[in-house]
Amino acid sequence: MKNILKTFILLFLILAILTLTYLYKNPKIAVLCYHNIATDEEKQSFPDEADWTISVDNFKEQLEYLKKHNYKTLSMDEFYQWKTGKLNLPYKSVLITFDDGFLSNYQYAFKLLSDYDMKASVFVVGSFIEKSSSNSWDGNLKTYMTKDILENIKNEYPNIEIYSHSYNLHYQGAINQDENVFVDDINNFNNFCPNTDVFCYPFGQFNSKIENSLKECGYKMAFRYGPNRGDYKKANRNDNNYEIPRLNMSHGMGIFKFGMRLLLYN
Image 1 (cartoon, rainbow, N blue to C red):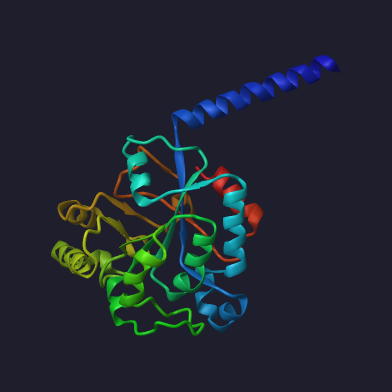
Image 2: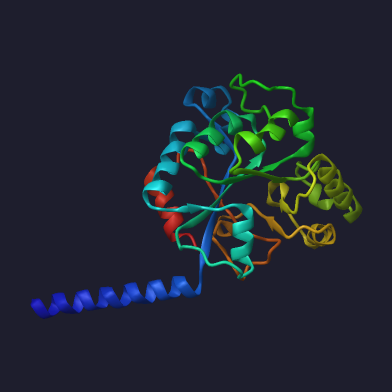
């Protein structure tokens, strides 16, 4: 019996060493993708947004998990330096991202991130921001931040960074536009929000035309999103810099599933 136990312990140690060696030689980082954040009551008022919305309590629980388990949240520059092999990071590192620029992010998420001293990057749709006139929260999940709010974020929440989700191409089928349309849209976003060099594909749709346009306009990275289950995986240094995968943070995800997604998705 003692010999069996010793053998089991030895095999466990060997497996642990091999796992740690693999992780060291093949570092991967989870890029978390969020959209809307709302209270349970607000979610019930907009059932068509449910798939893209997690509760405030759920989001707070996830941040508590990250803090309790010593995860490091990254700035976009830290992620890029790691991605290009210029910076080594702890295995427990994550990049938190939000898509679209919903006002709920400002109302709930940024304050919680600040309370936990965590960083995040927000991909906004420029035309949505410029058309928005709602500076105060009324529970409408389809409301976007305003330009004034976006400009104040730099001072109010310095750990929050703003990047491009296109200026006016956030619709299904935008991928079919001519390359000139992409270049014009990129330039329009840069006029709206200068010095942007990271992109997130609307609806996760991309092709070589879009990638080439981003490269020509000086963008250094682009993130995708789905649409297939196999597309949800951690980022590694060998990924194309313009096809970086992310993990969807869907509604109703319990903390156990959240932890398993961070641990097991490869």
